[in-house]
Image 1 (cartoon, one colour):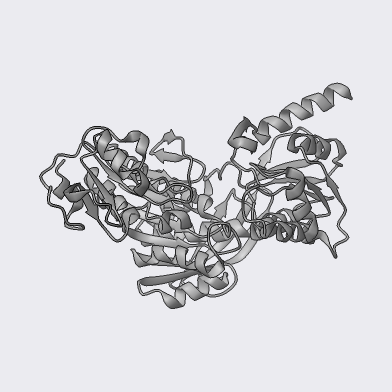
Image 2 (cartoon, one colour):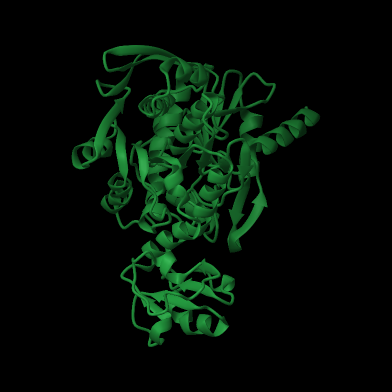
Length: 481
């Protein structure tokens, strides 16, 4: 592909007729004829490798400062932004050939995107999914490492969706993806804002910076669907310039839930909008899932899908792996696996489960190492507020001492009389929870959710699927009884 065609007049070059064989920001992937982008990361600046990449065979490099490399350097104000745009051009702009739906916020993204995709697929619209748990092209499942893939990977995925005949792409849009311009020049037909609670402050300098990152999505969408039950959602609704719709489970909004009934087996409610009411039944339990379902239905109604088809699809939606997922035990107590890893998510899952807990509500949780340490005591306080007993353990310790992470967590329990145990090894903690459970208890395993691994020192990943762990430990307990 010609260099000038890739740049699309977004940067100047004297060698526009040069044939480009690949585009990359990864020094390991540079080959003869590559266009190399000098991206500045946290630990490595691509500018330092520019001359070496030309020697390696790169046709040109894109940089943010003059490196003295003559006409083979292309200057731009923002390498990341231009890289995202060029990746889109490399694949022929697949984002323009799909109806794009984006969902952002701290909690609820995975459930909302999954439900939207389920409804669209059930109504005959082939749909792709870009998400935390996995990516999907129709019924095909593709592994993912990031909530929002890197720019080249995302455009390659969207191109595959187009070639597979997808009409829609439903996408979790992370703050990282927005700030780092991983989404290229995507424009969204609709975008949902769920909420904003403390997370990723190891990356964003403060909550305002985090909010502004999320807000970027609403500069590139036609219709915003904002949760006004959240203070940041209300603020966003008042600040954005695109077409705006609101949703709520507490007050009147463009779409709001009324007559809500919640059981362990699911929820029901009346969805009210535009003077009409629709009765919704869902297998997803909890008030937070009523909110998630309201957002998903709102998006599908706005897309022109008939209400009766949406309601049928919503009723048979199976839910999401690792999101308030009941793990079979064959016992007289219940074990639930949930991805809750922020204070707000802990509150949501425990408040929801409390409604159908007959005896004790036990929360087993930890916090990730090398991540926002400020939320650790807040996680503990949130758990202590709603649980009857806590088991404090590890999550993904990474390169931090697990005991040090737990010490930070325990600081949040000052002033609470909620009994707790500390079992540092997560498998041992699960075994302890199962051995000490009583009839009618509900054990919430918080933090891992869909993850089937644990990250230890040296970025070492070990297999750790809590569904398997529970089954194995129960078998051992049963053998010893």
